[in-house]
Length: 380
Picture (cartoon, rainbow, N blue to C red):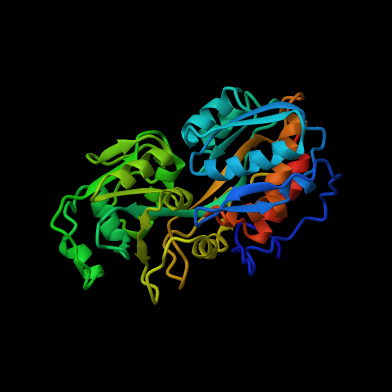
């Protein structure tokens, strides 16, 4: 199916990604097996390194940005470095805003961001991307989990309005009538809700804001484009890992972070009442159903996506993010370009995407993955 700005992306088998015929990779690497963390906290052994094409990769590649994709990036870096001798990929999970700032200052070869570049950020990138500009290449999908710690409550259900009021300090007690109505029979305590949010600029914050603005506009009236936490009160922590740790350690806490952080910390997650036949749990499979309906809004080599945060489709988890790798379409530094292309070729490949599901992420829908695979080799 042709990708366009008008057509939704219908992906029937998320796990079975279509490999673009335009990529003919020469094998480079070893037969080393790698162990990757799985959703249940164990490890999975795979021979990922044996099929990775190094394509002239050498030296060190610096990157920074989204902490939501940090767990996925750690898997990719481990596999890539095992295959390509002498290569070091250094990715710092400092948040989307920090990553884009470093990219537009020429400090990193690519940035990870949970939201597409703004017009002013694209304009700023032209100073670094000589003769080109920064483009958005979707690479990681997944649900933004609403994690909580509440003894005796294992299957909490919330809707967009209730989540908005909790994070806006309008609902402050766990036994509030709005929460009780969504959870009949649950033993909700008369205790104070401790709501945690990100202290740093974050695409995860922005995506949550877009969801709340779309699904509960009467209750969340803040700027949905803001990467900084807009509401007053609440408690702040740095990065997805910081928020997850805070929620794990505090009884009565609630926060938001990419699902892999909930999995790694064994944090309970909220199911969302979207108006569908049943509340929808945060899972890779349910996030994939929402991401597969995305529309491409970027043009040319830019693959920025428009997500439907108000979906009521059965089994579609609405609070999702797609993390982009931000790179120059033209004007990349000559000494790091081969490593940049080889690494992004791997992350977008069928093999690279397969490791995501076991880590709590959603692999890219087939059509999006195919488009990204066709663009990466054209970077110059």
